Image 1: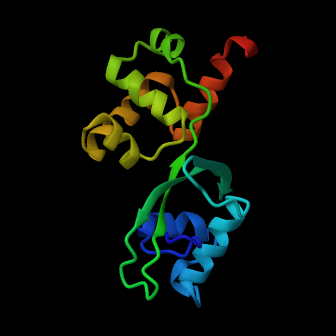
Image 2: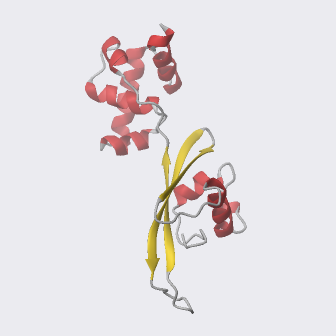
Amino acid sequence: MGAALEPIYANSAAIRILAYPQDPRTLASPNNFLAAKLQAILKNGQPSHYVSMAEFTSGKRRYLCRAFSLGSSSGNGSSNGSAQPKVAVVLERKVLAPFDGSLAAARFHLTPREAETLGFLAQGLTNKEIANRMAISANTVKAFVKLIMVKMGTSTRSGIVSTLLNLSPSNG
């Protein structure tokens, strides 16, 4: 983004997150929308030499919005030659409290990779997101999820999470 938080580039995933629940293709002025949305998230605080950070919700998911000052560039295309600071904005899924799957892994005889998958499921990640984190294919994640379901006696991802909540020491 430029100095006034006007978009220079935004990837499609970030636009979908920020536009939710609206379809980004229906935005009349995507650049103006993104600038207004980011200014609202960052509370009109423009980053200087430090990092600005804010939390926001898009749908049911929580995100962190981090804005980093990239310093100044030497007036490329600027008529007065003044330096224009650039800002990088990074959106990342907010991870809730770290998940300790050791109780579930022991109780349901999960392999280490199944337990790792279970931890990512507990964070609400999709198969594709889990695959990226584990450096495996989404089909392998799908197989792990099915094995976890069989071992836990559930038939859905939400059933897995429900079973985990019921295993919690505070609920036992």
